[in-house]
Amino acid sequence: TTIDTYLEAETTYDIYVKAYCGIDGFSASSDPLVVTTASQDLAGSYHVTVTRDDGFSYDHGIETIVLVSPNYYKTETTGLWPRGLFSPDTDQGFNFRNSCGEIEVPEQQLFQGAYADLVFGYYGEVKPNGDLIILYNIDLSSGYHEFYAEYVKQ
Image (cartoon, rainbow, N blue to C red):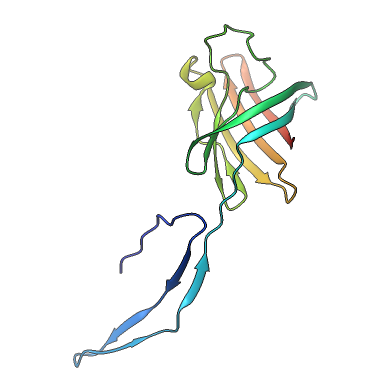
């Protein structure tokens, strides 16, 4: 059995199941299962509000999410830290992956590796109107915090 797990976005595939039975070489194939993959382009401008698990909230204003590679994106900020707080050269964003409207934040170091603290997610979704909800954690040396980030498409 060979299954290619890399499918091109916005492509239609006909998938067949073929069974080989017995020593006489008899085989049978199914009717095609037609599958069309979807692609959601999440790159663009969003109004971002982030709330920490203790209720403190920060309005980041308008941010740009950029496409890094197919279905893999990067934000401009992480947590409650405003852009440019550390230095103009510090990339304060985090990466996330979109798969059929479900968002995953893979484990990564804070601010694209500038700090050893870990960022990782446990839930995210693309709303029907294009807005994003991303819940993620930051494991800081001073403690562990959960964040609820709302990205409203502009």
